[in-house]
Image 1 (cartoon, rainbow, N blue to C red):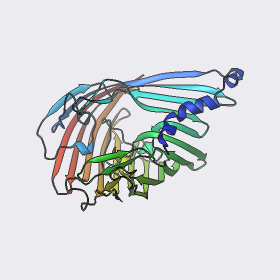
Image 2 (image 1 turned 90 degrees about the vertical axis):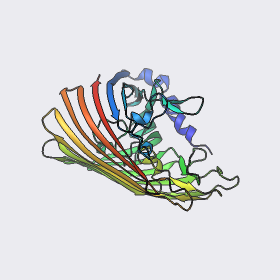
Image 3 (image 1 turned 45 degrees about the vertical axis):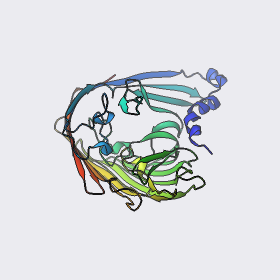
Image 4 (image 1 turned 60 degrees about the horizontal axis):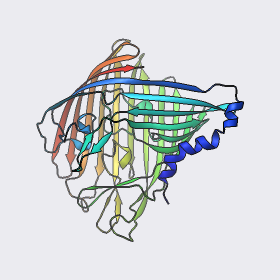
Length: 389
């Protein structure tokens, strides 16, 4: 059973099934196409470059797992426009309702050379492609497990340790109520493992979709959400033929955004479970460890972030963001060089002299600790200019 192609092609299937030409022709409402985007220029200085050929993606967007251990003392500076984005929304009439399709690209694609080394390319990379009809969403976009309003305003492209901003294929249904919203989703199944050698494995075949339910309470003071997830982690005979160990696990997350004074706000996320691997900080920890016999052991993970944003004036603001992630790895199976703890701190100053323009500077400090006690640090200064159009 191969579930993932269904998610990948679903956006085109729903368009074919739900938008017969006769329906559009008979409807008096027009078709709407809107285009937009943003130009983002970054200047990034790293005290400990992760190195690599050309420009490493981890030197441009914070990746906890790439913090050098031991430290390299190899400084780097890069200026680029790769986090610039373009997007489009197409709205088609469908009876008394409408079907909206959204697509978005940035320029953060990666490629490998003939030696298998990864570097950042200049080609467009698709971030989102999904359609919405009434309360149904189908396509590739942010996971339902996350509360997007809890994400802090920062310069970095990936965000603090403990964030849940992962994009993949999904089918989601939401209901609006007087006190907030409820969500139920099936999302792309994928299992990531740490082997007995410490290397990572990723398995997409024969994966049951992740099951996610979420409630979100909204008031004038802000919002709070609680999400629950069930996942099957499946080895799919990868290590030993005929051994297809699989285990079900669960995870919980609470997050929100709370306002103070006029514009000041507190944003937070806390998550815990034994199937959080690929969801937290772009797979900083894997879902499970797998031994040489193909048997798996789920990894318990706890992670989250806390962000306070203070508005100095109506156009000038700062955010202090602290994030952390911890995994209980089974060192009877994997080596003691696997990751145990990550932390990050962001502090910035952002200024918007006009509504569409933001200029800002940000300091980021990252920390990585291995199971054997070895650790490493990374300090980064990032200057950014963002213009939305």
